[in-house]
Image (cartoon, rainbow, N blue to C red; front, side):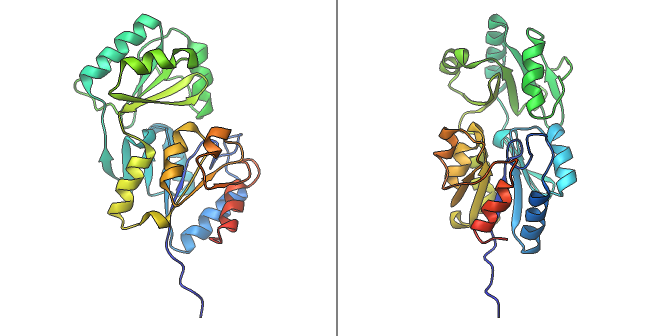
Length: 262
């Protein structure tokens, strides 16, 4: 008689993790996802992307559970179960400061992206291409009436300290040399994962997470086994329990094999 497999909550970042550098999914990763589902494990996406940019991955890979905008929005069985919006007054002050510094920003609602400026289109295009996205169009909106979950800001590291020190009510998470996600303070992928784990009755010992970026550090540390991809930076690898091969060289499959999950 075979031993009973303990059901796990397995969480995957998208860019640099589930997707190869060419933004496709390897056959080994597809096989790994199929085997995990056959064994009854619960799979989640956890990404900095909005719903608009995550939907193609959700549909093509058959995910039912997903955490978006670095934890600001969460879905279980395609139903929204978590929401953490940005405060309107604080957001207005932030955007005023960006205008002074000529920093471009994009406001993220549940299913749309609203660009508010055009100071450096090349910089925005370069960063957006990393997540497989195009430059969002400029749209006027009423920040008091819209639910805004995240701001994408486009500036390099030389401005990090100045901006973060002025706005303590936000968390700033860099995901690209020119791209920063701005979230409510204490919001993160890890916080939403913990809330969902409790809701679904998973203990920490049953959580496994995969990631490669700076916005994955907390979720790697919050899992029982945090797996850093081989293409992650040294800082991210330092937050992990296990370092696997790269996203271009079957890293997910190899790690799951090593963990005896497939």
